Amino acid sequence: MNARTRFFIGAALVVGTVGYLMASGIKDTGVYFLTPSELAARVSADPSFYNVGVKMGARVVTGSIQRDVASQTITFQATDGQQTYPVVYRGLAPDTFTDDVDVVVEGRLMPDGTFRATTLLAKCGSRYEAMPKA
Image 1: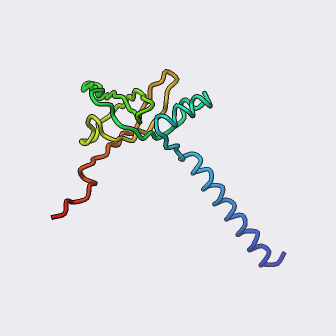
Image 2: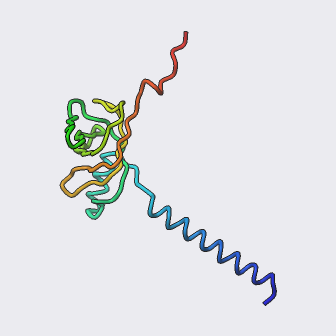
Image 3: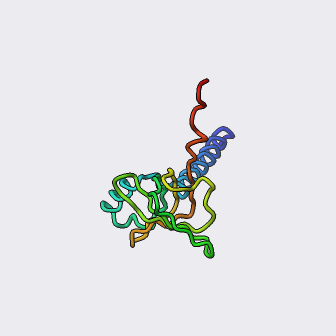
């Protein structure tokens, strides 16, 4: 084999290995982003979708937040106006987490219908509004 052939075989192996590692990394870390209605539709179509990692974008139902300070557990209802899920999150909530705020929770929907969140992000509307014109 000449040097040029060996070079192309080596390059093909390197490119193939990098491609495989990228594809497997994306598959392992990729997460669905769904609304509560989309999540309900996905679960009704495929019952094995429970315990799959997802990000859910929703709004906190007013008056549903309950905090257990001793265990640092927060429970609340998340809705998109059509479907509502109870969410359980253990950890410190962001300062902007209040009633009627948009949230993104990352976690898994359990077979009992509870969404177990591992990450809780809350949007602060006042920080993202345009400045009033004078």
